[in-house]
Each structure stands twice: as structure tokens, then as C-alpha cells.
Length: 170
Image (cartoon, rainbow, N blue to C red; front, side, top):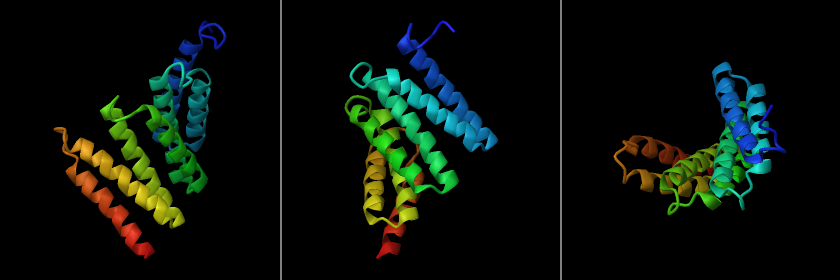
């Protein structure tokens, strides 16, 4: 009650973002599209106050979270439009989450973007989306191959899936 949008807009946005994460997790646990819809609404509410010009990294994180929820909804509901909205949110996030500024978040968001473009490209038979997926996944792979995390098998598998989808279109 104290963290109203009018009194403490950034605190309110933080609360909305936390609510979105909680609803997202519940939606996954309960296999509930309704909870995921509520999560998307909470992330969009947070973006009312988390303006790019004011708090660019928080804005980018909310865009990334929104993209993830929309990607899950798009996959769950077999909805290409949701996947497109997810792609747009990830691309917006990457405007601030650059490799130079925040390499880990950039790599994770590139991976999220690539996986969603792969799902979209497979659904719509779009070579353009599949090529963009391949590029985003390779960029993420290149970053994570320099860390100690063992991502080689994951990236080999997902990039092979992208290549197979592209070949199937030819």
C-alpha cells in the first residue's frame, strides 16, 4: 500500500517486476497460461516506470523478462504472434544489454533471442528468422565458450537444430 506508483514509482516498478517473476514461476509450476498472462501484465506495468532513459539496465531486464514470458506463452499456445512479441522484447533489451556493458546478460539474452527465433522460424517456415536465430545462438556460444561453464554440448545441439530447420526449407 505504501509503494504506490504515484508516491514511489521506481519502488512500485520493482514490486511489479518481482510480482511478475513470482507469477512466471507459478505459471511454469502450475502449467498455467493465466499466471503467465498475469506475469506479462506485471512486467508491462513495471515498464511504465522503468523508462529506458531513466534506468536503462532495469528497463532492459524487464524487457528480457517480458520476452521470456511471451516466448513461453507462444510455445505453449503455438502462437507465432506471441513469439514475435517476445523477439521484439529481447531485441529491445539488447539495445542496453550490450556485450561490452554486461557480457553475461548480453549472452543470456542472445541465447533467449536465438531460441525464440528458432521456434518462430520452425513454426512459420521462415529462413530469415532461422538465420537470425543461428547468428544470435552463435554469438551467445562464442561468449560462453570463453567461460568455464560447459555449454559446448548445448550450443552444438541447438545450432544443429537451427541448421536442420534451414536445410528443411531448401
